[in-house]
Length: 283
Image (cartoon, rainbow, N blue to C red):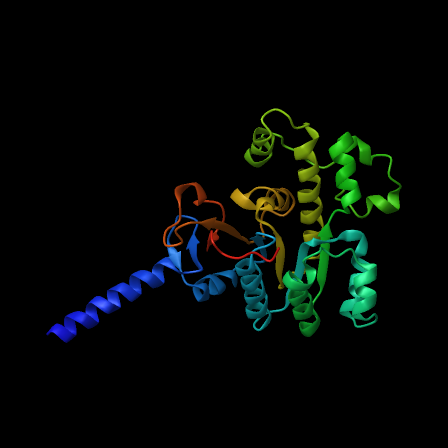
């Protein structure tokens, strides 16, 4: 009996310790825990998936690959990402078709500093599957123009450059909670153009997702979580233009305790990846 009690006590201690040291858990919007396999199965219902990540979070990047790998094994897929700017699409396509080598790709396409550690595996997955990978983000210089001078600053651009942006004028609702929160976080010190710069990014990413989406495909889009959290941002623009498509969102949050979803993180997305706040970062 003493041996049995000792074994049971040991299992309880091990179980308790393992729960405390879990790297991540996945929850539904309402806070119900789900396994990754169930999340992957649910994603099969989507036409377009918005995967909201933390740019330096290795759990995000690992699961991004798992989502892409799983869906591409069962369906025709397309990829898109905030991390690539629309005016680089031609050179991006040349690399995907192996018309240029990696050295040329690195020099011709504006890559984020963490491309090699965090995004190259997604590009290689697209190459392996011979899948389209869409550079959806607005060129940074144009977002900077909006930040400084509002949407009107884009009116003077030549038509060939406007092709890299969502059609102007874009819809803009400054009362959306995400844009209002952005202003609130600056405690009155932000220009009203700050959320407009965010909106032109959201609108442009939505534009290039829908412009390239093919019926019957699964379009997986990778973006910072703040671009799709709370069913706003990119998703708001997608629904303005194509409300009948089936969208599923994923978000990433960090918490000290990964075994339950904190109330302030509920409702951020259809699936919420809770990562231990002590998790190492890629930069």
